[in-house]
Image (tube, rainbow, N blue to C red):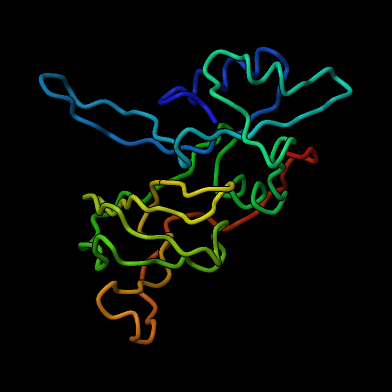
Amino acid sequence: MTKSRKEGLAQKNLRAQGYETFFPHHKVWTTPRKTKPREVTRPYLTRYIFVGMDYSRGHSIYTINNTIGVATVVYCGYQALSIPPSIIKELKARADIDGKIPTGKEKEPPFPGKVGDKIKFIAGNPFAGFIAEIQRVDTGGKLMVVLDQMLGAERSMTIDRADVGQIIPKDDCSRPLEPIPLETHFPAIGGSPSGRNH
C-alpha cells in the first residue's frame, strides 16, 4: 500500500532499487480552476501497486516498507500477501507496457445503478465473483464502489461502468438479477505475466 496519491513515486523508488513493479492506472483529462485542461494519472486500485519479490537478489519486505512513497506492505498474517498470478495476468493483459489501462472515449448514457445498489463484475474481469456496493456515480461512467474483503478488508476503488455485469437494486434485492448491457472498452486479453510472484 502506498501513501495517498504516491503510487507513481513509490513505483519510481522501488524500481530504482531493482524491484519489478506493476502499477495499473488510466489517464483522464481534468480542468482545474483557472488553469487549462491537463491529463493526469489515476490508479486502477487506489494506493496499490504490485511488487515482485526475488530473495536471491537481496529483496526484503523491510526495504520495501522503508521506501519513500510506500506506506506498508499488505500482510496476510506475518507474511507479505501473495496475489494469485491469474489476477496479475488479467490486469497486465488489459494494460500497456507502462501499466496504462485504456478507457473508452465515447459519450455514454447515464449509468442505471444508484448509490447503495450492489454490483457484480462482468465475466472475465479480474474481480469476477466479487460483489461491491456503489458509493458514488460520477459523470463519464465512473463508479466508486466498496469491495468486501478485498486484500483482507473492505476496499474502495474506482471502476468503469464497463466492468459491471449485473446490478442488484438496494430497494428490491428479491428481484431476479438482469444483466445490464454495457460495452467493454478493453482490448482482447492476451500476453503473459511475469513468472515471479507478486
